Length: 171
Ligand SMILES: CC(C)(COP(=O)(O)OP(=O)(O)OC[C@H]1O[C@@H](n2cnc3c(N)ncnc32)[C@H](O)[C@@H]1OP(=O)(O)O)[C@@H](O)C(=O)NCCC(=O)NCCS
Image: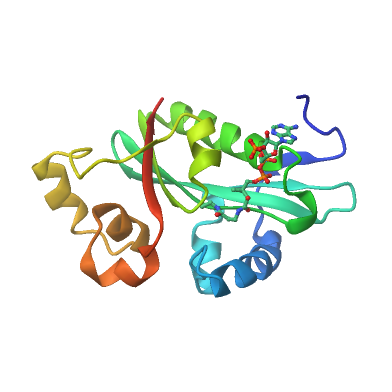
């Protein structure tokens, strides 16, 4: 289906942070996404793409977080209620995967309840930890990032990951 011409996909700007936080809030209350401090969104703003409508309201957003030479995560992908089911998520995920290719990674991870959506975009449920070899696992353990801890399935982030499915796709 063609992209809606009224909706624009663009790089996120610092001014988008309050709207991103406001859209994450109800999803965080449902434990679908992790709410972060405002400073974390500002620090990560260059990872985000957004889709906005003609009036400048955010229809959705998503981020690509690089974890290792060959590995990145799609995170904080969300579409506002009124825009769900119209291809906004598809457009954002496609653009994030394109970014992943451009930045040099060959595999993309996600942690999600939206298994069918990601499956339709080429992701598979991760069977185990064999996606990274033991040396890389040891290096990733040095990260302070919550998403990396979720990827490694560490005990301290189990409350965040409960019920979520760990998925990965090759590019
Ligand atoms: C997952 C999520 C981002 C999907 O966003 P979305 O914009 O509703 O997704 P899309 O519209 O692209 O696709 C959803 C459906 O719309 C359909 N669709 C309608 N118009 C479409 C179009 N123009 N192009 C593509 N698909 C379209 C798709 O076929 C799909 O249908 P299906 O689920 O029956 O196969 C959204 O549900 C969401 O925000 N979920 C909560 C947050 C979350 O869980 N994020 C993932 C973890 S990071």
